[in-house]
Image 1 (cartoon, rainbow, N blue to C red):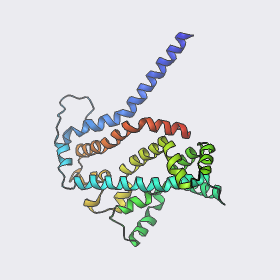
Image 2: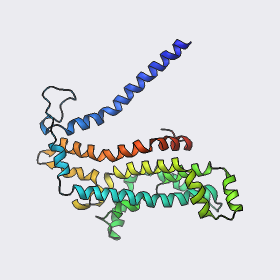
Image 3: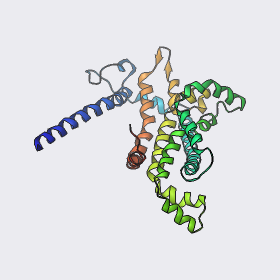
Image 4: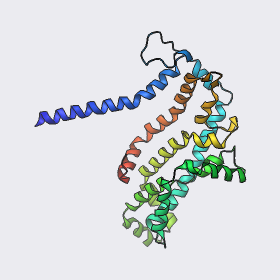
Length: 274
């Protein structure tokens, strides 16, 4: 019996390693191409005669607008996450603890909006942003991302799992809803908030379509869509773009390393699969 269990563990571990390598291979290839000259971009990962060079990274870091792209991206991510947390925490507390007419219907309607692809609203958003004069500004990226139903559902479910005894004890002591939220719910919701911050950071940092459509000025662009500017007459300079992608991926990896513990706790406690 013990041998069968050991064999099952060995097979399971082997399969997981194979799947992990399959998922990591595109990233490994991306980094490998970033160190190659343009003529060797499409050669296999392990090939004879491969030349390594740092010129691709020099091209990215030496671009006159690279500092602008990094600053724009950081500002957009920070401002969006702060606004999103304020809106989502208040709304999640209301849906999980307050009683008001139509609460279930409102929440159901919000959840239903998750089934509408964002691409279907691109043209109306563009026309609306044009009317309120926020095209070619970071607000055209921040405002649509200020609230997200997914994180509202995540925090609502987490808040609902907090025992009512905490709320009742605070109410007896004369604490209002704001005090309860700040001193009880937020401190107890570290994993869920960390998950929200991590997912938000990744989604906003890697956002390509919105800034590509709503921002035309090169100095106002974000770092991910800005890689399109590394073009040549014959087409895209793939090694330079891979170098830019590798650089853009570094903050995401660093953030995940420091928040993976809270991320796993938040996903597990919220009951999210996949």
